[in-house]
Image (tube, rainbow, N blue to C red; front, side):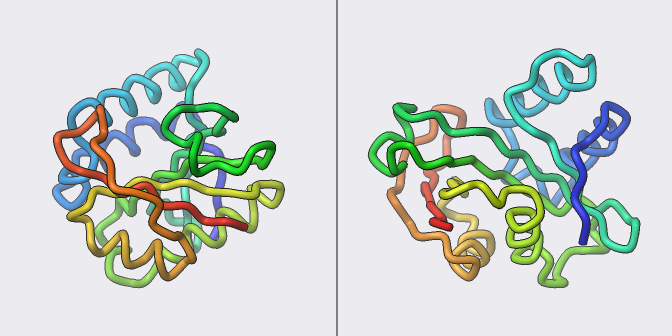
Length: 165
């Protein structure tokens, strides 16, 4: 499995994945708008909030990941982030249906962190409470539940989870 930073030419593929039936329940509303706005800025070579990644297996693109740096004192992470540790946020999806159900989610996380984030101490992820499959995978990777919270970008409750590396 390989990861590379997305190129502006990958934005159409990513946007098509975000419209897929198996993705839409988890990327919608304000969260989706923020992602699409950031992808648009990225595609137009403007400053972007996230680092956009593409996952590939045997040279086939199948997944999308977003990471961002967590700064000390950010309100939503303040009580969970260890001061002076390097921390990132992570969001991910498998876009290509041919790669679903093959156990790739866990490997995507582990390999991305091993290959691209060896200097990171903590990783935060915030799945929706009803996304039991994702929560199960994150726990298998080693994420621990911090708290349940009302996300300002969603009508659904979310769980903040933390992985200490």
